[in-house]
Length: 216
Image 1 (cartoon, rainbow, N blue to C red):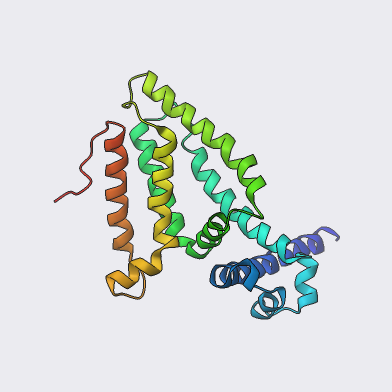
Image 2: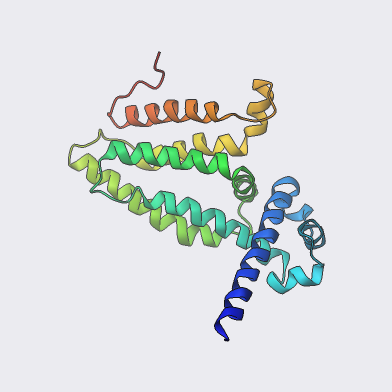
């Protein structure tokens, strides 16, 4: 008799947290950390400020949770690179696709992370150093193994990954600029398809796995 209520409480908490985080992402993306208030997030989430603070006692705790969620997703995609047993071409194609998928599905979350980094990562630098750097080194080691085995051409893997991050994340972080230039309200699925073909072709060409980035 005691198990069902516990499950209900857990489910309710997850639902409330998801609502709070959804509104928090929107506010942080639109107003930045300094311009966002707990009271506004609570109001938009349909909660009292006190109720929200039961789940997230401070604005920084809420902000860190938002960034943690972004980084969790990003690192899960990075982890897919760290498998030397897979075909390099398949791995790189899947990685570019995954990064663009995140930009398409989570543009606001991506912008929150970008704003934090552009601002010097004052509140999140330790987590980036602790979590991103080890996985980046593991990915670089895979590239070096592929190079040693003759599977790809010699390449600076660090800067190649920087380039992939920049190209794919631009479709979230600078989507406003793109839509302005394209004279439309939002990016369309075909834009992401075109970006995937182009970026994948550029990446594969960089490692000697030639693929035409601009098919007729």
